[in-house]
Length: 336
Image 1 (cartoon, rainbow, N blue to C red):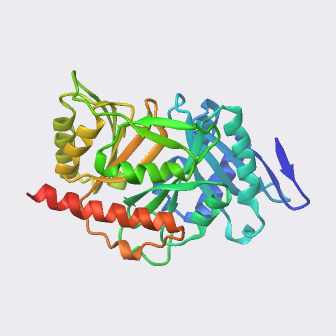
Image 2: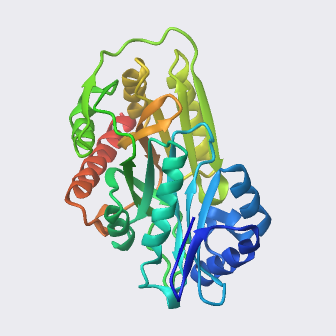
């Protein structure tokens, strides 16, 4: 599918566009787009689109030059959600509604793949990306503090601290009700998050784990960031999280995210144990894991001033206040 007028054509990427995407990235970010280094390599762009872990849409000007890029990221092809991101428009081609036109094609691709929804991570040093995803119907469901290094963007001035993001989500196939497990102290805020989408939540009882758990570790040294994805909570999971947190921090990780399946009856106890080790609640991820919805937590080992974050959505500001309060509480508990 493609859309066009006399000035621009918007369509799915073709192999011959890959070099143009690299040029577009350099034109917008220089060499500082460290969160997606694959976009500096044309052969990787082509391969990722061929296998379906990246679904790119480009905008071409009248000469056929790539002037904008927007994509769905789906590294796990079994996942029923994708991340909307890698959105960029060359400065001289902005204000022509290219992102909106590219988003239409991306949502058509998501529908074709029968995805449950898409999520987005919007920066907090300005409001533009937050307003953009809200125009497309995404709603805030968390705040990730210090997700990206200060140098991740090609800016005239270095950021004063690690970049924080607002985590957004949009359903394409919306459940009417969910039965989830979450710590009792976070059930109210979780219920309020889902209420935005018109989804009611019932919280099931917690239970103790009966066998060993399973954790996947994703460490990105260049970003000083790690993610721990718990596939199954077990008797050993809390101690394993503690061990991994210590090793990752010693190895240079400044922020560690923890995703726990809310389908697992042992998640409330595992979450509480993680808070004793300095992790704190930072939101939920609908259908984020293969096992279903996730409660998202994080550990932050660097200073961060939350008053510097720019957030427009009133509920997102409430989420920031909640997350920041949990950060202080978890830090106090971990020191005891």
